Length: 617
Ligand code: ASP
Image (tube, rainbow, N blue to C red; front, side, top):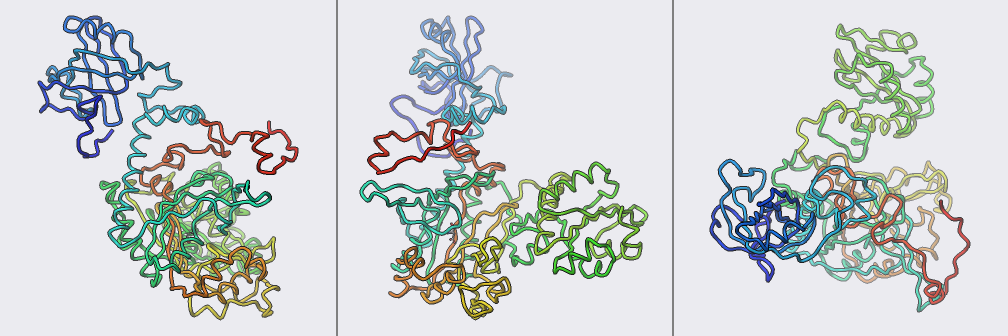
C-alpha cells in the first residue's frame, strides 16, 4: 500500500498510520489503530501485523514486559480492530523486512485495546489470491480492504483529483446536472423512474448529460466539465456495466482541433499524475481516420502497440477463380489479409482454433497461406489460386519467410473487423507487445455520420445524434429521393462525415465526442434522416431545438469513461475491478441485494401494477 504524501493523519485514536513509522522514530511513544493482518503466537512473544490502508506495522507483545496486553493479544484474531500503545524499536539485525515500508522497525506494545471483534472473513484479506467473484462482491467491504483493489481505488481518486485540477486551471466550470431527466438518445435502453406526483409519467436516468451540457453552452458556460454518473440499461461486458462514470466536458467557440488539443494535453497530464512510471507511447497522439483504422487494424479503437497490419488484397485476388473471393468481390465486398510473424508452421489444430476465433468475430471462414523458410508458399487453397497468384498475395500481404498469411473475405467492413479481432488475440498470444507498461492513446476521427440500419430500414447516427457534419459534406444530408421519410442505403447521407472524435487507449475505446450541430434546421434535418417525425422530435428534444433559436454558440466536447480509463491504467480487464461497488454481469448488487421486489404499498403510491412475470430460475 502506498502512502500518499499527505499531512498528518493523527487523530484521537492514533498518532501515526500503520504505513508511516521509520527508523527515525525509534524511541518514540506512539499509538496505532488498525486491523489484525496476521498474528503469530510464539508463546511469550506475540507478533501482530497491524494493517490500515497506508501499510502494515509489526507489533510485538512481550508477556514479560506487558502481561495485560499479552493476554488480550492472545485472544485476537485476523481482522479484529485494535488500538495499540507502544514504543518504536529498531528490529533486530537480520529480521528487517525490506518488503514493508515500515520493515526496519517494530512497535513494542505496552497496551492493546480491542476496538472491534471480527468473525473469520469468508476469504483471506491478507493474500492477493483469487477468490470467487460472487463472494467478493457479496462482501465487497472486505474485498476493498485488500491491498490490490484498495490501491486501484486510490489511483482512481488521484485520477479524479488530477482531472479536477487540470480543468479548473483551464477555466472550466464544474456543473452538476440532474439525475432525474428525460430520455437522452445515446442508443441504449433507459432506466425509468416513475413519478409519484404525476402518475403515468416517468423520468429517465441519464445515459449521459448530453442535452444538458449543450444547453449549458447556450447558457454561456463556455467551458463545462463534470464527473457524471450515467446509466444505460444494457447487458454488461468486461468494459461496460449498467452504471458507469464519465468525464463529461463541453466547450464553446471551438474547432474540432481545439477540443482534441485540450483533451490531449489534459489526458497526458492526468496520466502522468496517476501513473508517473508508465510511458506514453507517442505524443502528439497518433490520429487515424475511421477508414484508415478499419483498413489497417480492423478496429475503430486500434491497439497500435504491435505491428501486424491488414492489407487490402482485393486487387491481387481479383479474377483468381477462387469462388469465395470472386463472389465476395462481385457483391462489392472486400478481401483483406495480414501477415503473422513466425507462424508459418502452424499446426492444423491451431488453424482450426484461429478459424473458430474468426467465425466468432463474424467471418464466414479463414484462408491461410504459409511462407516457408525457403520462400515457397504452402496452403490448402494453393491449387485453386495457383503458385504465381499465391506469391503475389504473399507479397501484397507484406509477408516474409516464416510468416503465416491469414485472409478473410466479406462484405462491407466485416472482413477487416474479423481480422482485427484475430490480430489482437494473436498479438497477445505471441507476446508482440514489447513494453506492456506503455500507454498508447490514439485518436480516431472522420467517422461516417450515419450507418444504415437494415432492420429498421433507416439511417442511424454512428455515434451521437447531435454530432455535426464536416462542413463540405452538409449538402449530403439528404436522401436520394429528396424525401427524408423514404431513406435508402444508396442515399448521399451515407457518404457524409461527422465531426466526431474518439479516443482509444491500448485497444479500448475510452470515449468519444464531437463538434455539435448548433442550428435548429440542420438538427431537424439530421433527425429526419434518422427516422424522427417532426412531432416526435419536438416531444423528445424540444428544449434543445428551441434553445438553438436563442443564440447558440458553436460548441463541441467529449466524454471519457472513467472506469475504462483507470482499468487500462491499472491493467485490469474488467471495469468491476476499479469500481468500489459494482453490479454483477447480470446487473445485481449482491451486497445490498438489489434490485429487490417493490413493496405493494410503494407500487400503489406510484399507481403501478406489475404484470405477471415468469419466475426466473
Ligand atoms: N454524450 C456522448 C456519450 O456519452 C459523449 C459526447 O458526445 O460528448 O457517449
